[in-house]
Amino acid sequence: MTDAELVAELLERCRDDHRRWINGDASGYVLPADASLMGAFGGSTTGGPTTAERQKAFNQRTWLSGEGDVTLVAGGRSGDVVWLVMIERAKVMFPGAAEPARWDLRVTELFRLVDSAWERFHRHADPLVDIHAL
Image 1 (cartoon, rainbow, N blue to C red):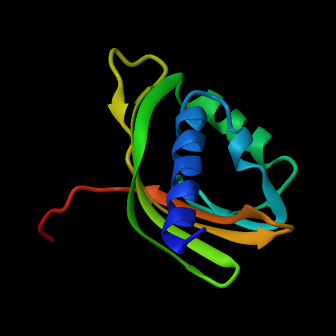
Image 2 (cartoon, rainbow, N blue to C red):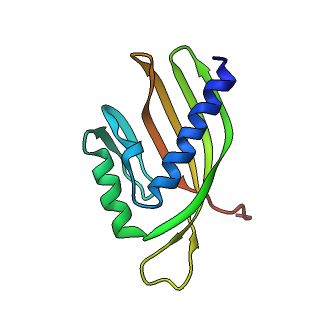
Image 3 (cartoon, helix red, strand yellow):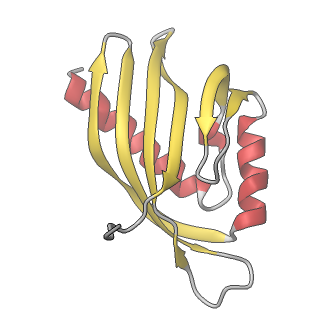
């Protein structure tokens, strides 16, 4: 598999994980114990077997459902590490809202090769803000 094919394959995985995540299924974000997670609301945490449960609990408190997609900004491979820089765009329904709202994030994810499988071990996401003059 070429590096470009690998990046494309992991991008599709990220797209699927994103769509499921904004609809309450965080199973794609089970991260190894030594992983780092810097979410869109700030702070940082580590991975571990409860990562998906923590993400699901967060989602259930924050929004009801959503739809969206992921756009690749840059990506590549160096040895046993692949990086993806993406924009996650979504419209999510917040509790009590009359209509869906934008939930767009700037995201960087790192994957490493472990036992012939690509494992996500870092995710950093923060809100994508519109460009404006200072």
